[in-house]
Length: 210
Image (cartoon, rainbow, N blue to C red; front, side):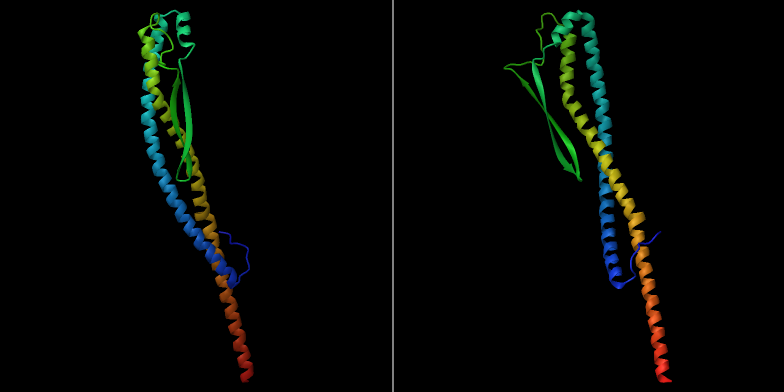
């Protein structure tokens, strides 16, 4: 490991020892953060897989009903029934901090006129399959938003884990070994200078005593 290019003085060694102490403390904190992030990330991934499976099953069931409705209704009637939605869905996205990661929090709100229904049509000329498809799709919405929230959180956490891992490795395999090697070098140099001074003093003493 290459050492730092510094002057081998006691002041420099004292400064490097403080840097080494700070680096070791930072390494421990980052390692703890990395471990906790990994734990939460794994929990989120498990939850994501379970929710995705559930949402995909619900979407499949809703799609089947839509296909059945399209089969029993004329194309014109099917399109006219869905062309003008009776209400709006407003999405509010905020953020919360999890281990220095700003993960999204999604909430939705229905907005419609007085007595608004989720069905944007009358029931006289439409099929029950279309009613079932729209009801299922509407019921899926909370889970769909939760899935989007969790998947984005997983992505952000994965990015933060990678950044933290790089910092941990930089400290563990580069900075800390460099500081240790440099401190070792300065210690050897100072000991060597001290031995040189001792030899000179002994020579001077010998010359004086002659």
